[in-house]
Amino acid sequence: MRDFAELCPAPPRWNLDWAAVRERFGWVRALAGVEQDPVHHAEGDVEVHTRMACEALADLSAWRARPEVERVRLFAATLLHDVAKPLCTRRDEDGRVTAHGHSRRGDLMVRRILWETGAPIAWREHVATLVRHHQVPFWALERPDLRRTVFRVSLVSRNDDLALLATADILGRHCGDTTEVLENIDLYAEYCAEQRCLNRPRDFPSDHARFWFFRRHDRDPDYAAHDDTRLTVTVLSGLPGAGKDHWIGRHRPDLPVVSLDALRSELGISAGADQRPVAAAAAERAREHLRAGHSFVWNATHLSRDLRERSVGLAADYRARVEIVSLEAPPAVLRRRMDRRESPVPSAVVERLVRRWECPDPTEAHRVVHESTA
Picture 1: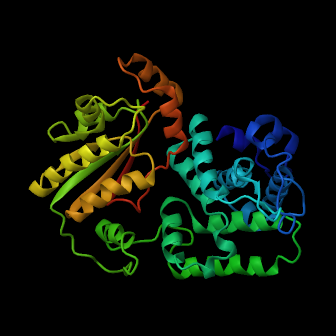
Picture 2: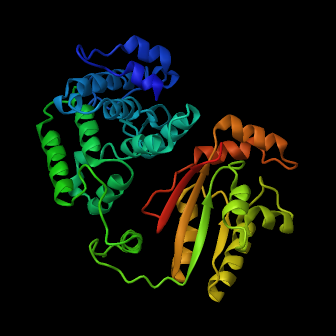
Picture 3: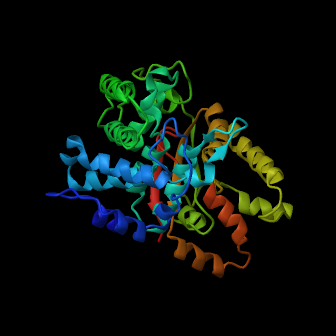
C-alpha cells in the first residue's frame, strides 16, 4: 500500500510521475511493447494505455473528491487493471489482437502481487474485485447476470469505484467516440443505485437468504428464506502452511475432521500425484457426517472457487449451514513453516496452488471469515 500511496497523484498539482511508477513496479515495465487491438486501443501498447488511464483518473473530479485512502485504492486498481495482458494477448486466425480472459487472470495476478507486498486482505480483495470486473460497466445492461454481478461486487468492493475505474479506462484510450460507453457506465451506476448497492454492500434479510440467492438464479433477494439448516460445516481454505491444523486445534477441537492430508497418508498418495481418489474419499467421509447430521470441519486447501463449490454444494444439499474460514500467512512465513515439515509439499505444487488462488467471498457461504496466521 505504501508504494501506491507514495506514487498516487495528490493535491494541489495532481501530477503522475510515470517514470517513478515504472521504476517501482516490474509488472508495469512488463506492459511495454504488448500489442492491443487498434480498433479499441489506437493509443499504443498496454503501458501507454495504463499511463493514460491513470492520468484520466487523476483528472476526474469525482476521484479527487474522495478521501485519500479511497483515491490510493482506485489508483492501485487502475495501475493493475490490465496487468494480465502480457500473458493473455494473442493473435487470432484473422490476425486480430485479442486478450481474452485478462480480467479473470488479472484478479489472480493482483491477489498474488498484493499478497507478496503485504497489503491488508480486505484492501487487496477490493482491488482484485475491481480488476476482475473492470469491463462489466461497458456493456452491463446486456448481461443476463447483471444483478448477481453487482451484488457480488458490492459485497467485496464498491460499484461506484468500479464505475470510476471503467470511466478512467475508457478515457485512457484513442478509440473514436466514447459517448455510448460513457453513457453505459452512467446507466450502470444508476442501476446499482436502484438496487441499493452503489456505494455500500447490498443488504439481505439474513445470511441464509444471501447464501441461497447466489445459489438459485430465480431467487428474490428480499425474500426472508426460512433457515432449515441441520448442522454446520466449517470449510477451511488456505495454502499449505497457512495454519489450518493449528486453527482447528484452537477453534474446533471437539469436531470430527475430514482432512485431505490424513486421507493422502491413509491412501499412500503424494501431494504431487493425482488427487481424484483423495477427493472422492473425502466426499464420502463428508457424506457420512452429513447423513448423520453431525457438524464437522472440512480441512483442505480449497483455493479455487470451483473446488470450494464442490464441498459447499454437497453440504448445502444436506441442509448444512456453511462457514468458510480463509487462513493466510505472508510468503516468507509459509516457506519457513514448510521447511520445518517432515513431508513438505513440493514447491512446484505450492506454486500451482498460488496461481489458482481465489479468495472466498460472502457469496459462497453463510459466513466467511478471513484470518492472518502470521
